[in-house]
Length: 418
Image (tube, one colour):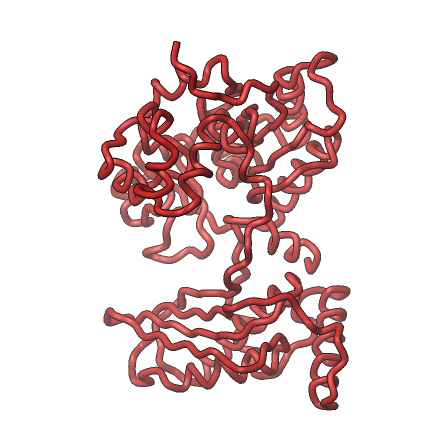
């Protein structure tokens, strides 16, 4: 038998995934929606997209990214709802509370996905993790509701635990280790591997790798020097063989906000107020992560098609709302002002750890920092936008707070300011 050099340790990583969580949360809350094709979007409009679909909708071909008009064509009875932060807050807090009862080493990957590391002091001889997984499933049903379906995956590393969690959906519970990993790889397609999307799949096939087994059997030096042309080739070899390589924090690349306008417009005053609102919320995120920015960018897509963007790097890092808006508004002033805007956004980049704790020699810098800190503390205590600049008034009434489906850092901030 060929030696694949698989990790033979007892699996102690558990991945928990609430299936179609946001659609399921709505079906749990509204009995009339149960068993019906429905979806959730951030803001209802004629061409809004599905960001979460029920299993009944998925069975009809309605997936994440499907436009409402396309969904209605596939199923005239399809129901679309706007996101409801209250339900997802309850779901998120409930899932974390359950996970924390089993280990202090937990990491939420998104609002509906989390990882438990059982390595510290846990003995699987006393109680197998499969038994723990079934207990967690039962507790989720009891705490969040019987219509909340949950998958549990167990593996020797985070990669295999996530793969196991997606093996049999919905309501599955699976374990992947050296005993069943080879048959598992033989049963799936290349793009079924977590992290291998179309681009990576094309790159692998260009080098004669068409199946997961060929990926596993590929020479590490070939993966490193020819396929990925970086240390990622080594990382993929480690993942596939069950060794941990993903237990480190990811680097924060940028912070920003974007928004689809309810109606296309070129009204400068209205657009600036809404952009100022987006910029202020991005500044809160920046300070929440305790970083400062060196660059700012603004981008726009026009109702007639096409778009515009501009960005600039600055000599000094910045973090206050006043400085962020100063840089963003100057960039925004360069846009084609006669064009109706459909979507707009901004982001801050070249992020570095904050130096706010260091004293400045300039009084105006000290005062600006103190004002920003005071406003943040008031809004933390009394709720978001208790205190805000007058210029953002229209924006606060117009732009809806989006649910950060892709991660949890800013969802924690949203809960803090709720």
